[in-house]
Each structure stands twice: as structure tokens, then as C-alpha cells.
Image (cartoon, rainbow, N blue to C red):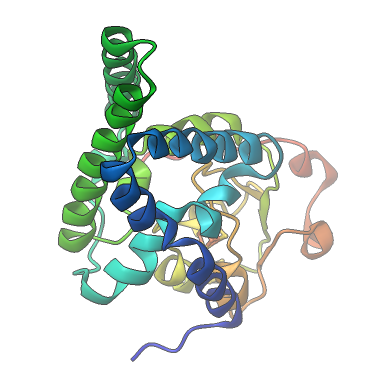
Length: 238
Ligand code: SF4
Ligand code: SF4
């Protein structure tokens, strides 16, 4: 069995406090549909944190992300997430689809709190089931690439709590092996900052890097020119 580094152990420990909220809300929601409104708390958390710390909410605070990591991690095929899930057009489509479904169905039952809650519970159940299928077939966090709140958080995350990468990087790719989102920090070597806004700020790669090339503080950047520190790199398409 693969040995976890201290950052991975820490997030798994925190996730044990949050993952159970997902099945609990789904189960409660089918009996007391108004529980569906709790979904808005999760949406607020993702967006609120994104404004200051990027997608850090998705790291261990999002019950769905924690659920997929902890439970699907054991049964997933853990293979490369298909590029389809990373396409900008697919992500925009998912945001529009989910928002439209909520908007139209809310309009139809407006004022009836139980029916409105049921709209959210139905959506939560269907998307969770889809995430379990994708997570089992590919990688536990496959859903997190097309999650509408994750995408909105991605849009708000640019430049928030950046992951710095120094020229010490030798492209050994160990960082990608431990990354819960299968991101590639080494693609940004030379930019000084890792420009992929799907970073969950989990520090797993920082711990895993044998060259100490990654950091969330600027300390490792002593070998960078000032000019490079202040430019934010473009998102590299995969
Ligand atoms: S683990 Fe470190 S040295 Fe290896 S590719 Fe990633 S950043 Fe570069
Ligand atoms: S790039 Fe590093 S900090 Fe960001 S999600 Fe991947 S492992 Fe975590």
C-alpha cells in the first residue's frame, strides 16, 4: 500500500469530520426535503473561500469531495481523468445546466419550501451518483473537474494563495502522482507560479517534491528574478 505523506494524512484526518455530511443530508433530505437548502451553505463555502484561498474549500471542507476521496479512493481504478472533464466548454455547460435546472424547477414550485428542498435533494442525489460512477471508473475527484461550484471557484481563484515553483524542479512528476486533482505543477516551471486554478492548496505536492521546488510561501523563490514573481501564468491546456 502507498505510504501517505504528512499533508495527505492531515487532509484525510480532516475529511473524516466532513465526509459523512453528504450521505447524512441526502438521507435526511428524502424524509425532510427542507434539508436540501443546506446545499446553499456548501455553495457559499466554495465561493467564499475561493475569493481568498482559491479552491481550498474543495480540499477537505466540501463533504462531497471528502466523501469521494475517502470512499472512492479505495475502489477507484485511479487512472488518468479523461481530457473531456477538463474542457472549458464542458465546465461552462455544467454550470449553465445545473443553474437552469435549479432556476426552472424553483420557478415551478416557488413558495413551497418542501418542494423547493426536494429539487435540491434530487439534484444532490443524481450528481452524487454520477460522481460515484465517474470516480469509480476513472479517479475519485473526476466530478470535481465538472462540479459547477468548483468551476465558479476556479474562476474566482486566479492568483489566490499561489503555489510557487522554483527552477529546482527536475520534472520528476512525483507532484502529479500525489495530487488529488492530477495537476501538473512542473508544467509551470519557469513561470514561478503554478497557474492551474483547480489547485486545492492541499500541500501534498509540496511534501512530495524531492527538490523542495514547491511552496506556498515565497521563501523558495530566491532564485527568481523580481519580474517573474509578479506575472501570473496562463492556464496550460491539457
Ligand atoms: S516533484 Fe518537484 S522536482 Fe518533481 S516534477 Fe514536481 S515540482 Fe518538479
Ligand atoms: S497542485 Fe499540489 S497543492 Fe495543488 S491540489 Fe495538487 S497536490 Fe494539492
